[in-house]
Image (tube, each protein chain N blue to C red):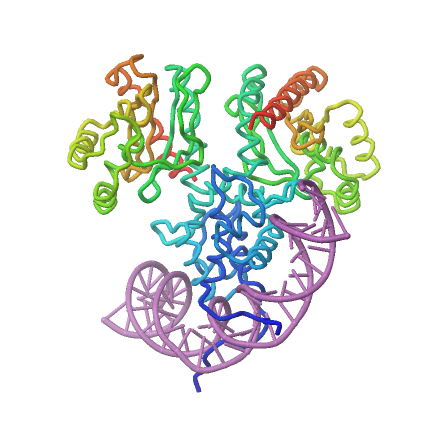
Length: 258
Length: 258
DNA sequence: ACCGGACTTCCGGGAAATGGAAGGGTTTGT
DNA sequence: ACAAACCCTTCCATTTCCCGGAAGTCCGGT
């Protein structure tokens, strides 16, 4: 006998399931087929198919020649309106380019989202140390220069959450002891800059500084990433701090203007 | 007697209604309150409230201090995965910067979405002519340098759709005659570049050239925007064309590599 | 020709979405 | 000081619209 109709059982809010399909995309998986998406979200093929159809009609997703789903231009347009994404990026870019041209090193701009760092911009590239990060990518708060700055100025609740949980190790020098990290964060608050010495890769060192909004809240962080042994953190920190302050001022001016 | 419950009447797919809320955002309205969103989408306050709650929980939207809704970082992260958005942008950026530094003029990068141009990048700024466009913004295909290039290489169906419809006028020199535009598009295909002479504003002129993917399909366009009278289109076109070709090659190389 | 895999369409039952009403908070005007 | 106007949030009885198994289609491989 042909079983038809919904076979009972809670499914969850509809919009949330649609968003779950979008959430399946990431730097590691920028393009996926129907079956891959259904597998990742755990929904039946026909359900995924119908929801994906709606997302494509709207322009959130596009299908390439092979039939795979990719993120659509419409979603990029929306993303460009995010104040902490493109907005921050555009205001800070001239200053980041200055810093990159003066030092000839990698410059990174990042914000905190929950208990992770999200990289908003990364320039410098060619001659400098290769870095693991990617624009739009995420990383642990505990290891990078930008991460330490953002963690040091995060709400206590977030700090406890991060320090209380498992702290990921990347190299032999990654600090994974909660007490030692607590002391480092205190230093960051006192000094106004952070140092991550070979905590992410053994050949790189980064120095970060906080960017504040017009009310003094830390909303982002800049960092310089250099090859280990090239320069001392203490010659880099004034440059990074100066740049961070210039960006802070530009943000405040922007708020007043528009 | 207290009327309770859904009062009947077709409403439309749920996911679509959620997306309609996102669609209300745009360059002109980057932040909106609950009531504004409800008004724009035509849905009841309580419905908008519930759907917005889901979108905020997921991270698509964020609420600022005033309680207004803004586009969230999560959506920006997703947008960064769009091949025709951030992907194109990042590959092309070095070449655009070269072109901008050599000419000291505005450089624009754009793609076609339906019957409009979407600007993906715009650099040069300081000393150059102020331009109306914005990264992530849209414009008519018929007036700008990039638009003429993209229209000239669009499917016949799209061309007929645009030329058959109402052609928007921006200045006294905007070409709004379909036959004249058809001749201009033929020239663009023959010459390999487009000229928009004071068609958008009376003080600016732009020269555009096509960017092709590895199969020779025109997927984007670059343009130089200069003050009228500063330089002749024919001295600019070799620069723009060379830059466009370099970007085309970089795209093809990128496809082969990753 | 047969098989395995991926994609698309169909449609009846019932879970999940809907939106009027009520309540609380804040600002504006008299 | 009071009221009026506005905005936001929560509640819940009533259906509507979504769900997903099954069947159909279209590949490329053996």
